[in-house]
Length: 241
Ligand SMILES: [Zn+2]
Image (cartoon, rainbow, N blue to C red; front, side):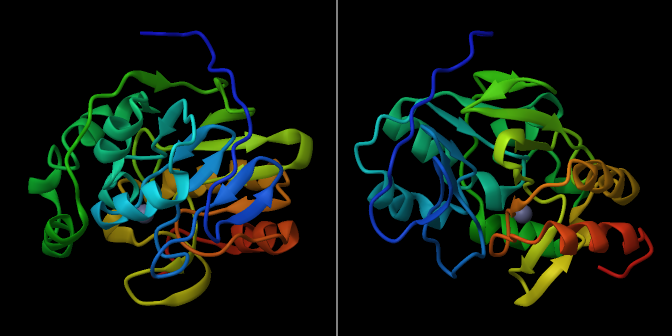
């Protein structure tokens, strides 16, 4: 596997993508903020459901993307990953423990999942794609540092840029629950989370970093680090989610 860090340059997507921080874009999605896809430098982070492929292509067009990162191996974060990697000829990167899920398009662990997840797989999931390189704690990607944040899935990763305290935290916390439309900070649903206690530990670790701009897999960007810290301080694994 390749260990040379990718050079990054800031790209600008077409359409009404939202500029979150220098070099960090939240692509326009539908429903808005339901399944977030970010362009960070020249790296695409997550790919939404399989229905997002054309929308991503419209916004990223002919941009010289260099890599695709999947924060974790759930189908609403990698549904268009195969299409994106094929279209741009770019490598797919994810945490080591999620490789089987990503490469199988979420089929590798489907049998043990409850019925709603199996239905969701049919509605939202796309084909798997080979992982070119695994992301480890401390790796640098597109000017961000990789943090291993297990719990929601074993190989879940977050991205952190200390200089302006921007955090892309995948599904460690939700800021909108797409299935119900419930808004605001919340723990990820229990039945979708492998180890809720470990996920909460990851959330606490992220809160200690004192992020100022928090980017979620689901929900709008939060620019209130105090609100984030308060939520994490009060959250309990016994909270009904
Ligand atoms: Zn998700």
